[in-house]
Length: 267
Image (cartoon, rainbow, N blue to C red; front, side, top):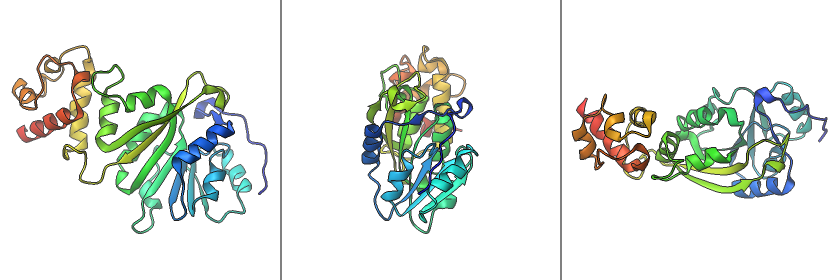
């Protein structure tokens, strides 16, 4: 396995390379790759996770945007026949195209903080082909994703991700584990998509739910009756089991799903 020095981290790609071996070991343990699984790594960077993933899985696809890193990855892992390197943008990549027969993908990676939210929504739109996801993200974002009603962190991102997945903050990662050292802490997020039957409270159109939730949180200090007054009647809000004086961050996902279902039925 030949290896050349990797180039410096590039700010425009949001690159912060993981270099703490104990953290790398903990992440691999959290992912728990197994033989027979098809794993996709987003943003391999300097291959901190790539090498141990290759040693513990039958098929690994990596998606790297930086053209300068791709030939170095190809050279470093030239001896492996279970690796496919894609020079591509993870934000527009067709993950379904990687699926063989009835298998599902396990998607992992140290994600650039500047593309986290759009990338998560892009992946969730293809969740029918995804077994689970394990990502390193900015701690603040992971806390928002996993937040519960009644907390400051709870909002649109919490609801839209938790409606489609079980979400868990696995452990925190100190900034010193990276080079260059970022100004924020990171955390490991584990996502397990629900089956096609949907969220535990029942299925509803995701796009419609997104419209309701986005409008609800457009002015989060106002009551739900005020923020939704242009699209939803007070009667429907009450019928969904929501008090008209509640603020958006106090309303559960189940209640937002019920309200969305009633709103769609009224159109």
